[in-house]
Image (cartoon, rainbow, N blue to C red):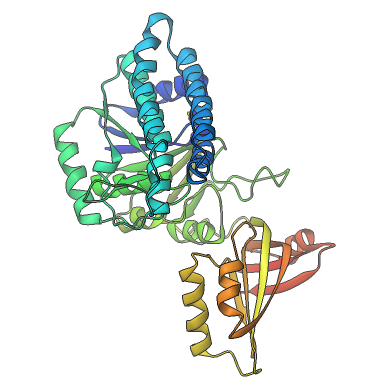
Length: 419
């Protein structure tokens, strides 16, 4: 048993769907789980549908749904030939009709639950297309609804997996369909009461890890638009190096600091059962890619760089100039958690606490809550630089000409907030 995961970039168009079919036909075998994300930028588009719905603009929401539907129709027409595309178009249209019906209703008071109900349609439609395409290729595929497999709690938008119940469902499916290519959605889960949930943005990798863990899979392979796990984002660095092999520990460190290739929750379930994770290029499936497994032998060979632009740097100090101690830190962490603001870097001195957060988060409710007890200042437009296995040469290279606002250094990692 293996698990394959295909991200949105790998199925963004008809060529991608065809390529997915080629990979499964040539490399997959039949006893396989295939996890598929929404196609291209569909999740972003569905977030716009959700926003229009919650603003009460049903006409705008319907227009945006029509654009998304037409984009999927074009993918279907390119991947299928002749009359074979009509049943597939009819199939996915049923999902778009359901979405249209949803946004014509008044949204419930639970905004996060409404969000999950809308954005999950992207994965539902993409997997229907992939399932139908594999059948078209005479491959033994079975479509499965992840909201009825991956059992979660009711923490909508970032649902937590109920592992025991999920494992029971996955085991039952594996026994029912031992020789089928099982097609299901990434990112999507469901509650015991039947509500659709999502596992957090970019959570499809985690879906693959969940199924690999529950199936005792021999491997999880994530098919990406990069040659493997790179030491830096190729969009930001001209020269990148592929990390051929790294340990689970190193992968966890990289994902924690923000490496975009690996979802932070993906690695731990695999590590718990020593299931190797492969990251391979979907356009060159015969290439080796990268392997994440138990060995730590290669971890320190190559420096890795992670850049987070558009950071806000908050400086929070006590109004009476008293020391920032455990009582204050407990209060501050509770406030950040309440307002669902993730801290990317933090540091405290005698009388202040400093935190870097993503620039697109809404800080106003947090600041409003804290300002009566603390003095709160912040800088916009900062950049968070993380270097694993650093040396002075790479530090100088990445910080040259920049004002360093915060610096943190351990034996293996150095981090800077710069402007």
